[in-house]
Amino acid sequence: MGNIMNLDDIKSFMPHREPMLLIENAEITGEGESYATYRIKEDEFFTRGHFPGNPIVPGVIQCEIMAQACAVSVKDYIPGHMTFYAGIDKVRFKNSVKPGDLCEIRTKMVAKRGSIFFFEAKLEVDGKLCCKGELSFALVPIPEEQK
Image 1: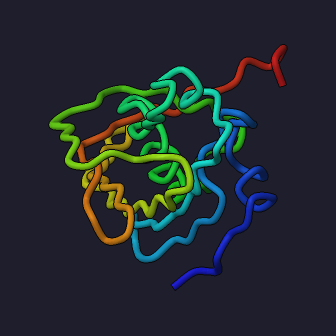
Image 2: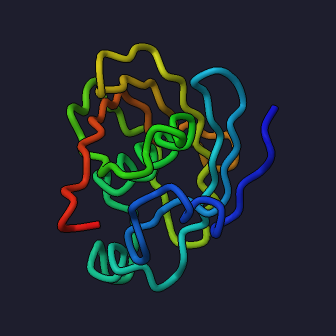
């Protein structure tokens, strides 16, 4: 539906930067829906100590990857705002995510109330569900002195 966004395109609206920018390519696939990818690198800060000899992407990072993919479908609302979690519900972890894995994230907005957006999201690797959940975030204006 939309054009595929590369890292530079994503940086034009996302407030995150490396090492916390956790999507590399994204696309708005429908009204309130998005698809994004992120390849887990061998030297990610979050896998170096989780766990030595058996690196696994922490669940909280998987949720962050999904949240950033959710933000793609509301990218036009983001400039001038910070994105803050409002809730993480019904999250389930089904399979491990490891360095080298290509995470594919699909999201769907299910509601919007004021500046709070509600999504369903899932993260898959090689067609296997690794994480899913309901995520919500608020857009909070950036104070003038911080712009």
